[in-house]
Length: 374
Image (tube, rainbow, N blue to C red; front, side, top):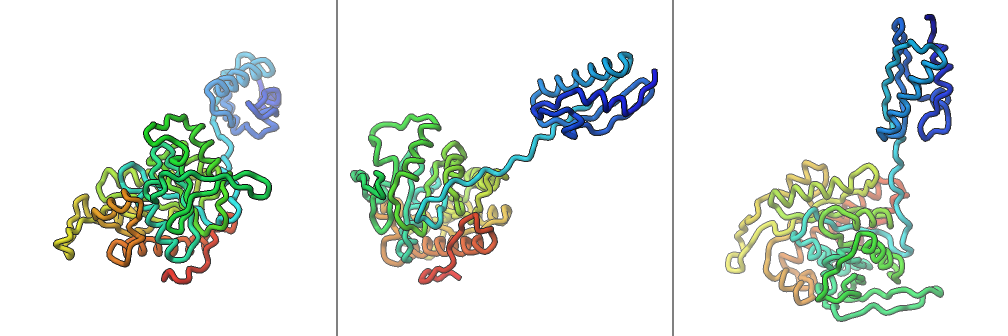
């Protein structure tokens, strides 16, 4: 029995690479071929990761060598899967008139993400920006209550011959929420596809007009709605909200990791730590770190992102949200300063992203007159 590598290569011309439509040789799938006497070792690469494809390739190689070269050859096949590199998920289409879309997310519920979103929106509006809020927390929409518009209903308006929803506006902020279209006494029991469809309608079938910022209040966790958002629109950047305790920080870390995945790649502008400390009214100089100290600061350092702000645990924040008047609307004070600092730091990071990212990422803020950030 005498044979050469050439005989093996010619035999492999008759094996089709799974999913390629070409032979193993034509597709460049064959790697090393080693001959040790009556033993032949064939290294081959395929792109189909299924066990069935691997087994089929192995069997066909053994059969074709036995049939076309020598049936007594001891054939060993090493099949390696090299799936083609996936292209990043293409960011969705732009919303005409909206310059920057900021996702506000948290790894877990109960950290005050919606409260932070509402107060950031009001703070940006006070700075002179045109601001909108999309309440994408479809299973627990709270923005209508926080903006004191729970009883309002968006009207239909004609825009260039198309019927669109007119967002509700209060405190200089435009708002759309699933809460406007559902019974507040009934639970929203939807599958992910239904929720994503409703979200897309609020994004693209709305008359948002000209906005410097659209803040998107995402649900807690990392799920269908988050993926739908990054696929539907070009998210300029994400802000992660956490509290200082370890379990919240662990979930926040997962939230950051989601946006940094290779097929998502949404820039994380930074972390806002909510409920950082408690200062009683009768002891305004004292700070009590009920949930821990500097947790978000250390997390931001570990993840290579920024700590945008620390919001204290103050009863008036909750009370203001419950009556539909975000605390950032009030006159200057420690709380307003905390939200203002967070907003300015967010804008600073956004400018840096604008300088470092390619134009296709549509980070478009170049000036921030009046907001004090440089």
